[in-house]
Image (cartoon, rainbow, N blue to C red):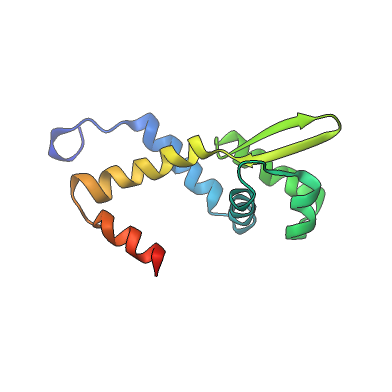
Length: 119
């Protein structure tokens, strides 16, 4: 049982821990930010490689890790492999944090998050 008698959703915590671990590598965070900037179309792997100056084999490894954790979604169009940020996966991750920090115990006021973004 978690704090306040609520059952902790261990599979959910484990999933988000893996997602944070995936985002903890600088190249993967850079890839995700680039894909978010290109949303909703996404980018072909070659364009990601050129933009971030990451060798193809290294890029492939990072993209696979992000895909495995539900943070990017690939699609094939002919000979090209396109990647886009998975807004569903990212949304779940943000909701996971938001539920604890901004709703249940109000460690961070939701309005302060919006105000920082506008500044």
